[in-house]
Length: 142
Image (cartoon, rainbow, N blue to C red):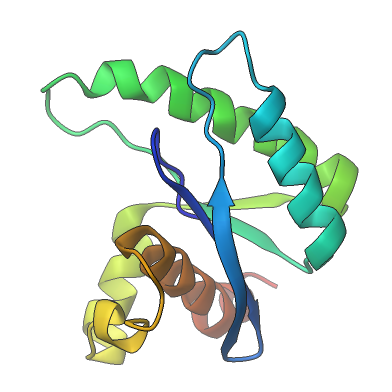
């Protein structure tokens, strides 16, 4: 998953293939999370994932990101619970630097080109995060 305040992408990967992808309606107001919760539950019921991984949101510098941080971290916090209750797995959180450095140094290719068939940069990022999980994180951490 690639969380965002306006675009929250998800990708299902099976083996080395992207099977399905889509969007989760993000929380716009922290007091109304109904669409977000329902979208997440629907994905977990439909996909039945072995792992759920997302890119952590990290505030860098200034420029108004603190306004984004609260909503994004609220969504990530809810996902911690939802993955346990509806997917029966822990939520794996990786930093942008973890997976992007792995791609750049280890793969030697641009994930945007590898996943060019996906409709947006957010879905391409989610697919790159998924491949990082498959090829690097699982073997190192399990």
